[in-house]
Length: 373
Image (tube, rainbow, N blue to C red; front, side, top):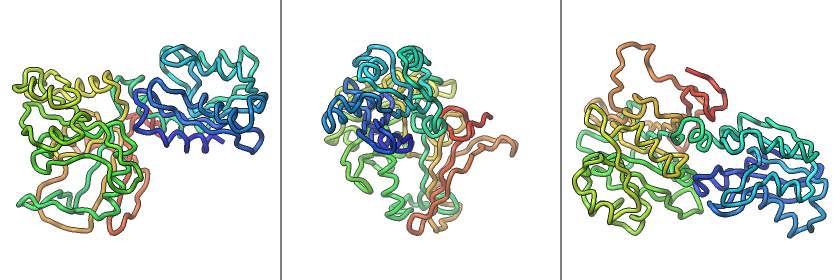
């Protein structure tokens, strides 16, 4: 039943931040009575949605003595909604099967204790690693104060994203591009740097590989506000969904504020660039839990150098451009091989003619293997 709950949780990815996208299943024996996915902020949590589904289909009495599986510990405090733990007790549920513990200071085991004190049978840690991975964005914000960062790279086999002249469409095939749109659809936000915005003028919307036409939050990292006002990210119909991360004293702040949904001013580092660690913390404070970074090579390298990347999706096209082409990854300034970025491969998949390498960086939060560096 927890796998069914995880499937429900995936339906809310990218749509319910800053809340975690929880999935819940009400069941009796092997029979599923109701399913639920967390609604957007202010809406019902997954457990309530699942129990409401049972009431509509089978009546409230069907909840008496039934079991509920939830991918995350039920909440125990009143926020925009009431405590799920209380609602579960009041509904007459007899057993709770939970995935991972909620580390939020307002929960942190209190939900489980409340349920047990009410006499419910509570089983915890079911598919714990999978549930932690599902809630990796939420856990990252609570435990580290920053979003979960996924890096997407699409290059030739020799690591190039464009020819020397700048031609880049298309390096990878349609199957890879459709997958990237599915990644966007499941992310709270998609980030690019100013170099990519200037070179490609991207839209960063969702068009391929999904029935959704949703546009995620689009983050433009532009420390000096070099990207012109007529760029798509700043001027199209979705400009209100664009957030610009820039230096605190960048020229043109007033004009940019009037054009986009949010401006996130961040202090510069000693090298004169936007401090990426501060930027990620600011994005978490603004409510984001997952950020998909799509370019360019300089931004990707800077995030890796800062230890801010958690997951990598690398699309490799069976093409060679040569060393005069534009590199997909900037310099990492490594002197020793042992300092190379360590990845834990998850899967290698063929997408059309391309290879898709999915890997995690070896960090504890939200990873399936739980390794520490």
